[in-house]
Length: 134
View 1 (cartoon, one colour):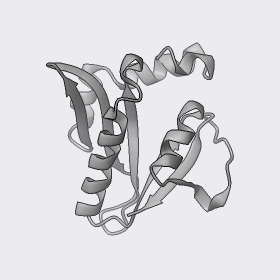
View 2 (spheres, rainbow, N blue to C red):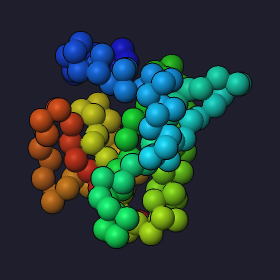
View 3 (cartoon, rainbow, N blue to C red):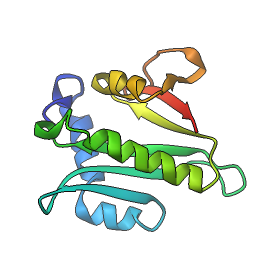
View 4 (cartoon, rainbow, N blue to C red):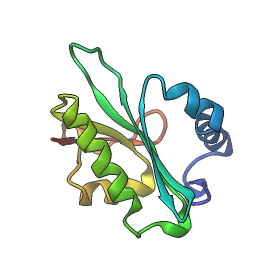
């Protein structure tokens, strides 16, 4: 989380870390599709696909997308996003949405994500809502 610490408060980062604890991940696995990137037997990244809509009208979001800083720019994040997009499409979604951290906007733009409604504004958490048509 050291990369994000220059953009977000310690309280916000603590909430994110709590959200990614082993017990929380196990709990969330009942309602989300969670993917973990592995390198030499070690978890190095994660990403989840969560439906914030209903079964009849799904709204899929990529959530909790992180790669350990020393492995940034090695393709792990790109592979996690590709898998989330594939799963969303498999579930019938026509688009996927993410809350892009300030320092991740360019990453998502390179993957074909656009700002929701074409407007680059921070939400209440300091993130940018971005989406991609599948």
